[in-house]
Structure formats: C-alpha cells, structure tokens
Length: 424
Figure 1: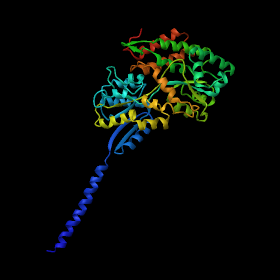
Figure 2: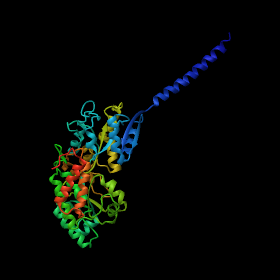
Figure 3: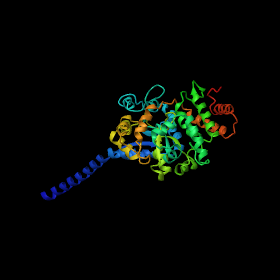
C-alpha cells in the first residue's frame, strides 16, 4: 500500500472540511438580530440609522405607513395579535386610543422600570405616558412646549422692537394682542394680521382645559373651550386674524411673504413649519412667550406585549429617550427639542438658532416646558375635536348665527356619532 496515496486524500478532506465549517461559523457569527418597527413619521429613519450604527449586529425592519392609514392598521394588528411590530410610534392625537389596548407591554414593571426615565422628563409628558391605572405604556421622546414665533421685521416696524423679552411683555394677554392686531391691520391697509386664523388662538387655549370631552360617559364642554370661541369671534370681528386655513397653501405662503406677525406653534414648528415653508427668511424670526403656556403634538413609543424581541425593543426605546450621545446629536443636528429635561438644560446655555436670529431657543423652551400643564384626554377626543372645529368654522362664517345655536348643533352631531355618550 502506497502511504502517500492514502494520506493525500485525507489531508485534502481535512482542508475542505475546515473551509466549509469555517465559512459556516463565519456566516453564523454575522447573523443579525431583527427588530420590526412601525412608524408614521420620517424622523424615525434618523433614529434607526443611528441605532444601527451603535449596534451593528442589529437589523431594524422599519415600515413607514402613511398617517391616514396608520392608526387603523395598528389597531387591527393589535386586536388580532398577528404581524404586530415589536415597537411602534404613536402620534399624541391618537395615543389615548392605543394606550389602553391590553396588548401594550407594562413598562412600569422590571426589567424596564420606566418610572426612572419619566423622572427625567417634563411633568406634562409623564402624565400622558401612563394608562388609566397609572401603568407606563409608552415613552415620549419629544418635548413640545410652544411659543409665539414672530417676524422680527414686522415687530420692529409696528411695535418698535424685536427683542424677545420686550415682545413677550407686549403680547402677555389676549387683550394686548387684540389691540396690536387691530392697529396693525389698520396701519397696513389690511395687508398684515396679528394671527393667521382662529386656530392660532385654539393652539394656546386647547392646552389649558381642565376636563376632557367625556366625563363619566357624558359630553362635557370645558369653560376654556367656550372662552376660545369668544376670543375667536372677537378676533374675527376686529380683523385680528387672517382667514387662512391652517396647513393650507395661503397659510404656508404667509410665512415667506410676511403677512402675519405671530404664529403660536410648538417646538417642532421651527424645523418642520418655518424652515420648511420659509427657508429664505432665516434670521427674520424670534420666539416670545404669549398669554399662556401651551404645548402641541408629540409622539410616543410603545412595545408589543407579545414580542419575542422585548430586550431589543427596550434597548431601542431606551436609546431614543435616554442615550446622552445620541440625544445631544439629535438636538444639535436636527434642532430637536427633547423630552429629556437634563439634556435640554445642559444644551440650553449655548444652543442657538441662526434661523431665529441666534436666539437661545432651547433656553426658551426649557422655561416654557416647566409651565405647561398636562391636558386630560380620552379616546374620543380626536373625533370630537374635529366636530367642534367644524361647528366653530360654521359659526365664524355665519352659517350658524349665534353661539348658542353653534353649541346645540355641536351636541347634536356628537349624539349622532356617539350614541353611547350622554348628551344634555
């Protein structure tokens, strides 16, 4: 027997086996953990990209769904518990409809202990993250206190100053704003208005209600809503407001054209409203405090109770709400105000916006955020808000002749849409 001829095949076999098993081992080591996230907002892509950079062994399957279809799709999969994402984004408007569905993970319990995260946030956000039993069901990553964005060129011309503190004092009550608006529309021959529409008033007053629409299965109209109606009527009669429709083309064009002096909007108005719609007006804007503190919008992250990737899902939620390196980068590069007070306060002394005339806008919103109250919400609010807005427009445009007729018509509509609700 030739020893060489018997050894050679064995050597070749060993080499081949080594290559095959080596490749298999290498392939196995490169397999990534999978995490499925649903979102309605483009801003999620930035966070996912940074998360994957931080954790290269993770692959996020991010599904973007148009906001018009998002809520119903999310409710549907949660109800049947099929194809539910591990993590999902929920806009504040719809959060009350999702928060109490018994498919959301209890984040108060160990190992999450989410109360520790809530302690770092503004109080008005904390209140909304919990269900009716006080259990944390989601985390808000966005701080949304509001302010009066104003055109510096217009306040200089008509008020004699563009200094934020001085402007804040000049608009510290609705009476002052009404007087300014009346004078401005007269001096400009009707070309410039103090506010864009009655919705600008509602942006402020809707954050100051004390009772939600439904209390003990009964329709309740909070006094703040009636006050808004009275203010809107006065503003329309005195021509304080233009007749622009919020988010309509005339409304967005007014920012570039300089036909409106004040826009009460939340933090995200800076990057998503004013910079988007009026990019050529950089430096012409400022931020002032108005008659009352307010907030607007916001987004929550929640986790599916039946997820097989809870550890990874929680890692993403923690990353988006507590990771100091990421959140500082998000704030500075995206002009993004956070729910995390500690980081906001750290950035406040130095972070400025060229678009706002180098104003320290984080410093402004840190102060504003501490004054915002939590707004009580129910699952009915979004739909009933739409009915209320429709009736207010009918009243302001003369289709309903009196405030009393408007309120009665509103009650009738609520009763038709929600027969389970008691309407006086």
